[in-house]
Image (tube, rainbow, N blue to C red; front, top):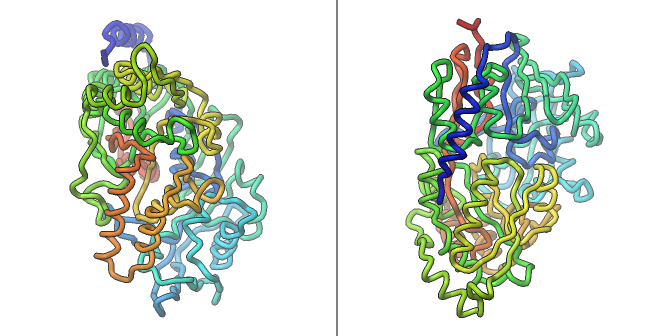
Length: 497
């Protein structure tokens, strides 16, 4: 049973009985479901770290709502098929030490990532770069090993100061970016304080593990806004509160169930397919997720130029799943035993618990293990799992496929955490990357996604809806389709009514 009425009622009664007055604070307090892991953009890969780093650091390029690359810190010209010249804008930021960002900082940032010994997880996406030459303070040239018309879209890493580029330990905890926000303090994992440069407005990121407690703190006025990571009934409840406002937006963040392809059991395609047919994704969306959450059949959304347009999805078919398992010798009396890891966030645990129940109904007995975010994420990057669930956020360009699925991208070189090794997939990735024709390139990526859907290193689940809940004295926060926190650049906190 997907909904637990007794549980929901107790949550709502708890909220109602404990709501009280709004504590006064001039800071804008943003509640997080998990704390950031790294504030060094060269190493940040989790969603919260990446979104906060966008506020702290400037990047050469960004993307519009149609996934088209656009200038951010710099514009560019293609001087030859393998030579790009970037020119920094005259108006650009200053680092915390007062030095203005220059082309030398850009070079130091990308040189560091490209050094194999530094083990940056972003290195595999940038190996196309042959050399980087600074022309002057404002101009920098990138020379490529091969032709790639998508190259400018790969330069999305935040720029660190050259005199600190080698100091990865300090930047991990004390960022020194030139972005819209300055770092003030990070005393512990529960609280991070930034200051908006334009008007000195303080923004506090407050880690609140439990979804119910996050909602409670919003109602009480102990936090001012929260984004995502709440079960649907809590969102609906918040929407009934007079002093709380809601916004929602369809998202492109891809949630999936991942497998260890080196494990004796989860490396078997028949087992992965039986699991895919046992999961009722539509019911999970209907009862737990937001109204604008969409089923996913591939990492890229269908409307993306390289997305899979007419994917043949794995239907919910528990009878077929049982039949497939029985052919492998597994029954209710002799179930398949698997371990499933997730974070300890209660919302994610709840999703995992329902998937556990659905798998149990076809004869798969799942041991569910939940861990704090740092431990969980470390296990996934190290390959210590059979199954796990996570989301990819902010995907704009199809170079993600090399980063996630190429055989050369096993951590720490990339994010092929499931150790998926497939010669045909590698060939399709490489053919797409080297094709000068964009139509042909798109077809290669679509063929690749068909291959991935057949091989199932991931079971696609859905593209999650984004929502923000905020108090009625908060104004000007806008949602983005990738769930970033850029709305904090313009949000205002008005005096409480």
